[in-house]
Length: 202
Image (cartoon, rainbow, N blue to C red; front, side):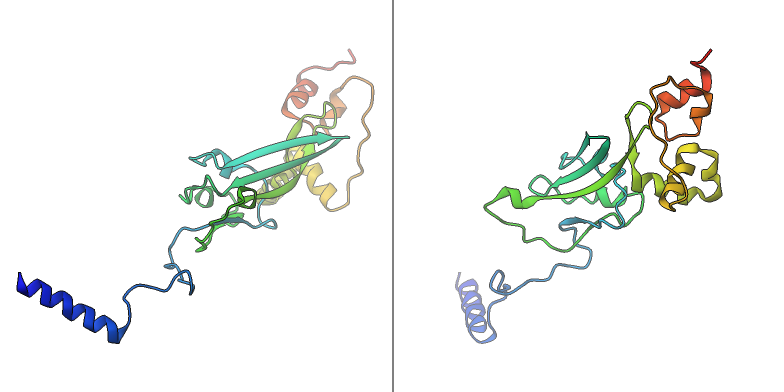
């Protein structure tokens, strides 16, 4: 029983001269390891508002809110950091690979939970006939640019690209029922099917 006590005494003496083994956090910052999975953050310029990160989030720490008012739509993607388990699924499934990334920030303690909610807002594209939500404008433009010249085979993608370039005039809504020429408009899948299969003017 004497040797362990001598060993402990020796360790205590060495600690007096060499200093403690532990870090001085929180008085001094303690950097995380390079591959540490910490706080996820949005990059508003590279996030396209597709919502892929919301659908793969295991603790449901992310949510989508679509709001349409006066013919304009807005999509909000909220992340609740107090629910986040820092699993990295949002970063792994981000279609742009840069829209949401995990940082090495881990000191998120706070007494106000409202500080732990972050939001990114995106403009929505609405159906020009029924007003249904088609998707986020940035997402549609990302898909169109990814397809390149093939995007011109889809009227919604084509018109979205031309509107982004300022080369397409906005088509006003008409009170008349849809007809086949209405296929060359920004339409939701239901209205596009109706203009393709049926001709309401007959």
